[in-house]
Image (cartoon, rainbow, N blue to C red; front, side, top):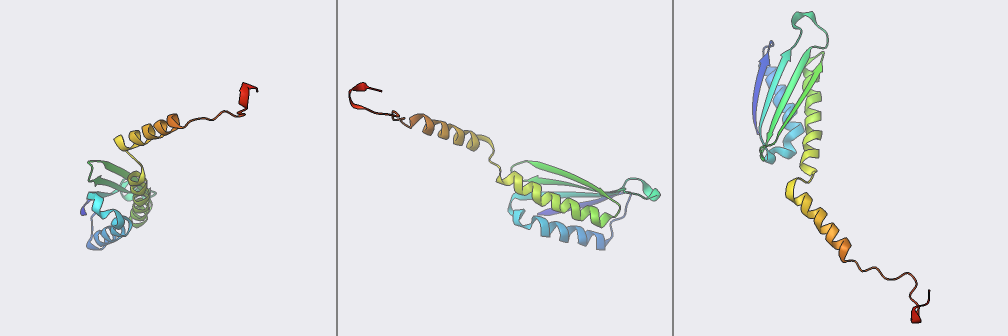
Length: 131
């Protein structure tokens, strides 16, 4: 898993870089075999005006050429990073558990085939054809 960390209107100190890598590794380590690259952009939207203006944007490239993009805003950079890392773990877990493509269609067609081959017995079988 490779990280690319960039700052927009904010300087990325070594402490912040270590926090980002540590937090994302903790959240995404179980999916490390399926993640090719993680792009992190941390920014300050309003500049010195303050408020809820710290942003952390995460783009995760999975090995099947699928990309997940997440973003979170908070008043503190560290809080934004923590929240987006939690979101990423949940989102990737859902994405990788979900069946995709042909496998899903094949399973549905197999179920339909099984339903069509089940023989239905008459409800009240009586000799002589009486009901």
